[in-house]
Length: 363
Ligand code: KG4
Ligand code: ZN
Image (cartoon, rainbow, N blue to C red):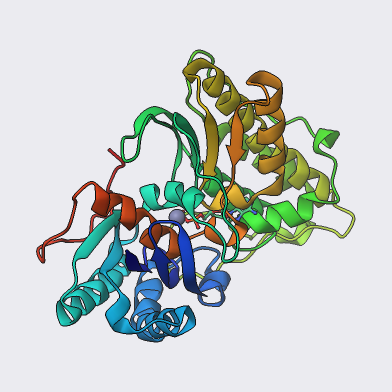
């Protein structure tokens, strides 16, 4: 089963060809970072319009790179949601047009499910083992932070979630407060590489007795620590202001000797520690065989290392830990084409009335 996947839920236009939910023949991702950088975050209207101009060359590129003919494609899969409505519309309509013209089934894919199924993808030339059930998944992206238990394919039991900011959102806001740029996660990770996590004491919301998370107090604590360190002429700089579409973002400025690396390291540690510890505790409680990490924040090396350590210490070496390849952590269409194979096996094909679903949940 060869699936063409299309992903346009946020700020990457992507298309990929994947066989049988596992083998990636090609994956093309066109990122829009250049377009949004000066705004300090994704501007939905600009994102949608860039998808319009990128989608056809990206799909053509994925088919060419896979070395297949268009007729070899068995199904067209597309992200239905969650995501930005205007961005999703571009991908869904491109997928419908292709499915209609090629007389192939159309498959709607949940973006969150796609992130999870990135753990089933193999890089070209390698054959990674499949995650064994029960699978415990820590899904950490720009919009979501959820702990999910899967006893079998396609069944998602929600154990916990963030009560406020998502982990990726926390990284992005922290990066803005420290003047580190966009996208925030990779910028914080880079800055943290030369810093000491113990140099500053930042709070962790443990929320005992639950599998939930919270990061908004941490963000406020970072603001309190970092604001007095700014250059004196920096007073007019707006504080982080989410959703300021089209407003030019002016990052805060710090003196050269400001301890930005230490702040970044302490901030990263305060996000990573509760994620890793609480996931390991849940793995023990649920008897999970495999723990998988999913979503853009799964690219974070500190989180990968800490999770592996906590699982080994608390759950033991018999519990496997799996990460998607770095390229399949942040948004991409290979994970969409991969997840589609499992959706098709459940017998879920979409009709032409299929619409985007910006707030689609994982049920
Ligand atoms: O999954 P994703 O590409 O988009 C959503 O579905 O939201 O995740 C994007 C998020 C952003 O918040 C970004 O800052 C974060 O993932 N991210 C990282 C890293 N790479 C991307 N966070 C921490 N460390 C990274 N290396
Ligand atoms: Zn995503």
